[in-house]
Image (cartoon, rainbow, N blue to C red; front, side, top):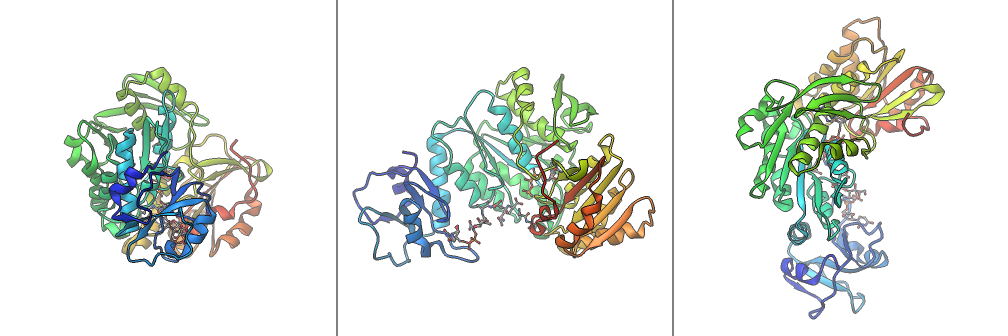
Length: 453
Ligand SMILES: CC(=O)N[C@H]1[C@@H](OP(=O)(O)OP(=O)(O)OC[C@H]2O[C@@H](n3ccc(=O)[nH]c3=O)[C@H](O)[C@@H]2O)O[C@H](CO)[C@@H](O)[C@@H]1O[C@H](C)C(=O)N[C@@H](C)C(=O)N[C@H](CCC(=O)N[C@@H](CCC[C@@H](N)C(=O)O)C(=O)O)C(=O)O
Ligand SMILES: Nc1ncnc2c1ncn2[C@@H]1O[C@H](COP(=O)(O)OP(=O)(O)OP(=O)(O)O)[C@@H](O)[C@H]1O
Ligand SMILES: C[C@@H](N)C(=O)N[C@H](C)C(=O)O
């Protein structure tokens, strides 16, 4: 049984049923999902308090729950339904995850960074899956709730656990890494994501470096060797990775292909079938980690040829009338938006290259200037730009000021309006990039589309 009674007794202050050796098959915080023989953990959120859903938890299959000790115990509980009384259910969830991580004791790889966490997590997991049981963060479940749920979802025979750690305030990565206790950690990049709460890029770098707080002894830290803000921490790194001469392990001779890149790293030639030159660096982290773990170059390259990447990250789709859509709409910040534009500019063949660029959130007081800075990347062979949303209008204004008649420019206040405007753009030999922050849900601009080319 995955979550056994001894683990639970180690984090609880008491329990409703005294003699109860039963365990649980899994842990859930949401009664809207099935949880057969599950342990329900009620959390207080912005809209609901999970303690009010105990009946729904039982209907969903839960056979026990953590219970905040000040909460009144529901009267009509089944006789065999177990409650473990705790002071704070979120802290107890985190403590349970830490205890379970220690019980399973996989090799844990913690991944953080302003951009590329999810992509790098997926690449690392795909590469390591070549020879072992790998567990990874599902989607983007990377915060103070997502990381504990990720660890508690680990199978008991897990060899590698690839855990994405997200943050938008200082101190959050430190909490996450002390729960996950990584054996290795990767900091993918320092951008401008969530700068509103971090104050500066220096603040972002320091917050990402918190990942070292939880590293176990004999661990490895890899990070972006092209980032000057990380160079003060070079002594803590196993190595740094990048395209520049400052990087301790250098990526060289990068060549762009129709659907990816070839490049050299550590004396070997590698091929990557992904869009975005920044993904060459994300793949380089995975290659170096796998080599450190004793994987052969042949095995690594084999796994690189069959990557499973979470959607809406430079995801190539077939559009109407022979057009191509690149859905990069999971999230955005100025760094990743400019990187996506550069990716579209370097694609071969297309006659028409359309950018659909929307709001970017959590940029703080400099949000207008940061949006306007995106226009510096908008140059031919880009042919058309459609900006979307109240903040996206700043990109429109900056592009308008350039008076570049080679690039058509239109603004839409809403995603619905943008969808109408875009209909005539979907023609043969046209590529359309969509990118904005998660909060705008820009993927809703898309017509019905099919999988990648
Ligand atoms: C708390 C929670 O998990 N909420 C999820 C819930 O939200 P909902 O609006 O329904 O309700 P409440 O949050 O008020 O609910 C409280 C609890 O009650 C449960 N419940 C509710 C109704 C019901 O009928 N039954 C119930 O049991 C409910 O499940 C709650 O436990 O549902 C939403 C829809 O599924 C979820 O989206 C919501 O999840 C929140 C957002 C969450 O934090 N989920 C994590 C597991 C997670 O990792 N989510 C990631 C996004 C993480 C992220 O934003 N990362 C940022 C960095 C930010 C880090 C940190 N500072 C932060 O703010 O998160 C990044 O840049 O990557 C994801 O969803 O992708
Ligand atoms: N090193 C990088 N530099 C710039 N952009 C990058 C880099 N790596 C990935 N990206 C781009 O950043 C966007 C988000 O990628 P991904 O979801 O992997 O990052 P993330 O860190 O998980 O993001 P989030 O914190 O929003 O969940 C995508 O557009 C991706 O192409
Ligand atoms: C989804 C969360 N990781 C995030 O980055 N939110 C931004 C600010 C958004 O809502 O777009």
